[in-house]
Image: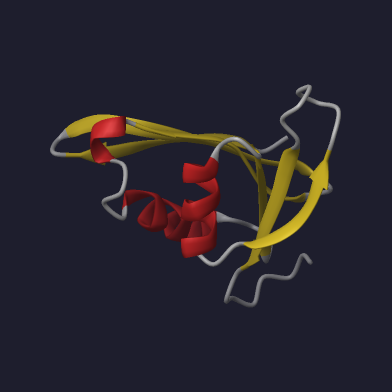
Length: 110
């Protein structure tokens, strides 16, 4: 399985990371993205998403977040992700929201 961890650097120090793989129906999957609170809202997540797409072997990337995580929802929408659906039952009272984005490339896997 192709599983990768990308370290996000700014000001010569690690400020976050992304765990990425292809276990979601053989599509690119952002399992987790963490950015230090001090660096949020500065466009870093958008740049990080762009780099993930450049590294991705498929033409779609999926991710999910809890419905209570409005900050992540805003970042995904700003980065051009589309809402894919909602799954109840993982975290009681806090449904999981799924998002995806098609890459602007000619990668062979759909």
